[in-house]
Figure 1 (cartoon, rainbow, N blue to C red):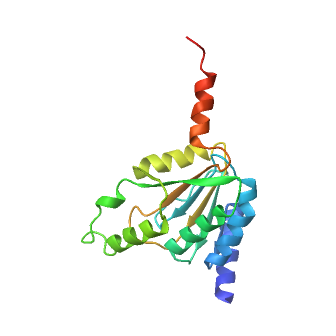
Figure 2: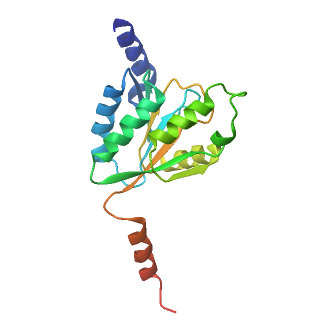
Figure 3: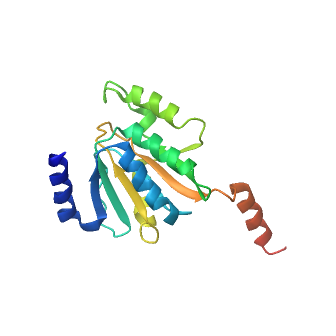
Length: 183
């Protein structure tokens, strides 16, 4: 534990307030519970693999964790699920489904477990570079929380864009249609 405290202090010295380290999913849950009341529509939470870039923008906070990637995802989704104001739109990479175990040993097992972790959620797949760009652009105006895990399989980051839990996509479409000028 003393070793982890020294590492945490070193990270704070290097990163300032934009990053810190936590050991387990309970600490991740506490962090997300602390942040969620402030977060809303258009904020992002990224459960990132080890190669995910460290953003330099002030709007991005990075948390480094030793906790298992899928355990972190499950904990974050469970925590979001307890709120009344936000719900996650889930994004994964288009690259993930086509990677073979021959190129990345364990990727099939990861995909199977990811499917279970995401239950019956709607998942949108986009190219990883597009997701990186979208998150970077979002951080210009809203906060982004990146939870960086030790996952060393490629294209495994999961992106959660928060949306209003008390206003549906269908209701938004109807509203937008009603705002269009009559022809």
